[in-house]
Image 1: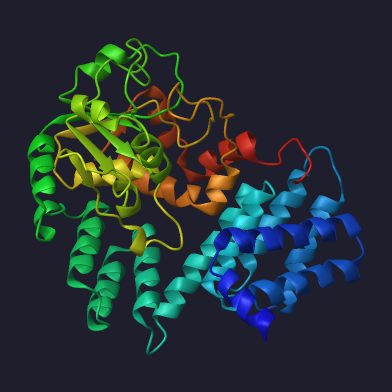
Image 2: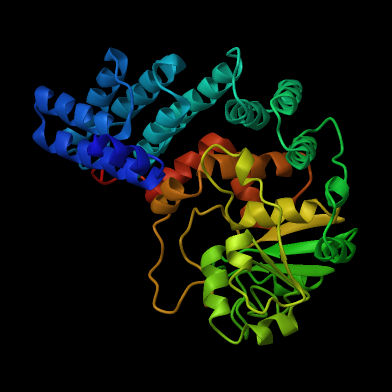
Length: 422
């Protein structure tokens, strides 16, 4: 009884679930025996609550076999077969959350194309669950997001109506409707500020952003001299600015910073310094959520908190770039041009973005624990294809890859293309 209660609590932690599956995968691939493969899967399934069936066990066995081969270079045919087999599985075999767990496992072991096929099963299951009579608000919300991501606008509108009947908060319905319009090529989104009783901070921020040309400067280290172009915009937005010259290298990043966005880690770090000096040179600082903004005591007058869409997303978060872009688009800028951003295809970052002494990041952990890279790419690509954002040469190059090309590059950067799994 204690074990069941303990696991029920732990199962809410997506990182814990990933570690259980990963450890079972490693143990099974090292053992190599069919009985050990299935025993380890059964052990992981009991802990995580994933239901088992013959096709799921067979797929797990195929996944383990690729690793157990100990090939120094992955066999393309074996990976293609795995991807096809994953795509052929019925969405009904697992709940959406379990498909997402397998998606994260495939990313963690370095198979991004296989991961993508499993993630599609999660979206299929979200939509199927929404069509079940008596589906609750949480299920309807996932169905709405799944169709929204796939560009099924009319179906997403249908789910919004169902969410309203299920008692969804009105402000959330308006926010989701605005986001749907933003992601749609058929309509213009209503300015996001009036969608609720706007705070004074939102009103002031909106007046600053409206009809301005905005440069959003990411943290990717670059040798391209585009600082003058960046500084030529009406507003310059940067991520995690902590004062001084960091992030303001004149040739590559531009000297200016008018607005800076902070994730929770950056907000906590900045709050432990003389943050008043930083806010004195910013026109606005923006935190991703309440946890970040609560770090600053007393709160600066030019600090605001963006309106998060995390409640709509399938057990993941937007990362810094999409969060900032979606927030800025609420206030109808004349345009947003993205610089020094490649959607995590490289791990190098400009000085000051991370704590001193931090090593370059393997973003696989971030993909699994917080930021689904396929979701990030699809949202950014959609906004780019609609002309709501554009970018420098590197950003345009990444957008032109399409999802399949992007995943191929992600595989080269973090996957198992030329090394053993895990």
